[in-house]
Image (tube, rainbow, N blue to C red; front, side, top):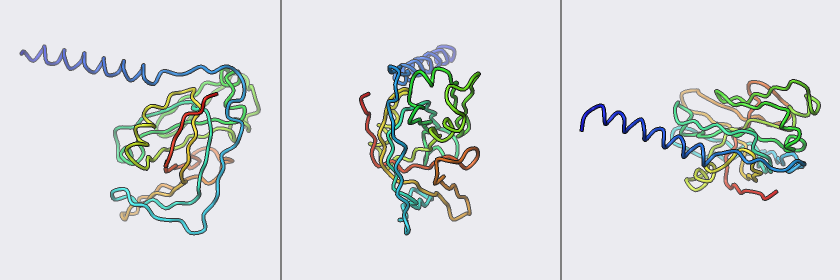
Length: 201
């Protein structure tokens, strides 16, 4: 087989895989209404446990329980953090789970951040900031990782696990946010996901 045919076959395979991924992750469009009314539940821990993931030590900071709408998802397969945190989810609750509100907000994710933009505020700015967050997902095992890979924008999901700090012996560290009140750099949660379920609206 010629090199040209091999290259063409490889390109076609990549296109096919991309189309399949797009179809599998195509957004859902729920009917209007608040679909995830409650704020995340967090119980801070006085003495966190330590979990080892390769050369990364995870220290549990709080038990974390959240039911929220998936506003956006971003997968990471390259980079030093991709093995530990293969996916980020931008999640919304309260009125940030309402399709009528979200139709007026442009939402994107890039470089481990979640961005939103409005032409006119459908709800107060502070409510957008405190009723949504970008969360870095650390799957507890291969089964949870597969479930995270199936999550679609627009779904209502329920996650239980822990907020964790991550560190290496070389001095690298990545600390979780411990509040939904913050914004900007350092405001994202590192979530060690022990279980994930899809909630029917």
